[in-house]
Image (cartoon, rainbow, N blue to C red; front, side, top):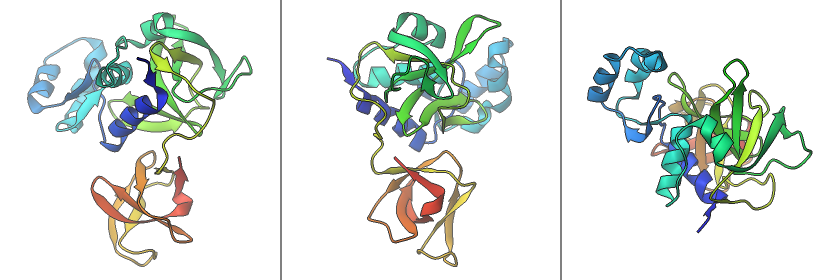
Length: 238
């Protein structure tokens, strides 16, 4: 039974909302102090960033870019190879190039499409993310950033429609009921007023859930178990 793109995106959204981290070679496991100590004893270059910054993800689930796909497909009863270059070459039913977030063949980039970066020097597809619509990609970006939402029109050079996915339609918003935070350290307030007390601050690229029909300038949202008001100008609805 094919996996729907909506189901796959929901898994990526779950990881994004859960503030998952990035450790090279992982695919959804919980990162522990013991695993970090073991990592710090390694010497290979692929694990250098993990040795240096991985401790920040202790207590969080972690995945690298293709590991996030591998985890999500497994959760949904499917399979995806853990490795971005092989994903592009062997696990795409259709693929091509991107130019500023647009397919170069003139066709619409469908939601649920994997997007890749290509390293010409190495001749490999070195990084992968998931296009979720509205010009956004969810990706496991690196050890310093973890799993984030990013624009599709920046670094991505290739696209691929993945085996085992059921694609429908084109660029339609699928993360209904959520909004992307676009401002820097935006305040979540206790009331719809700039003078109301601040519950917490939320960074660019995080997503919040829209809880009720919003007032004119404010949305009532929830984030990591906390509820409050955020100004609409700092949110991009999905």
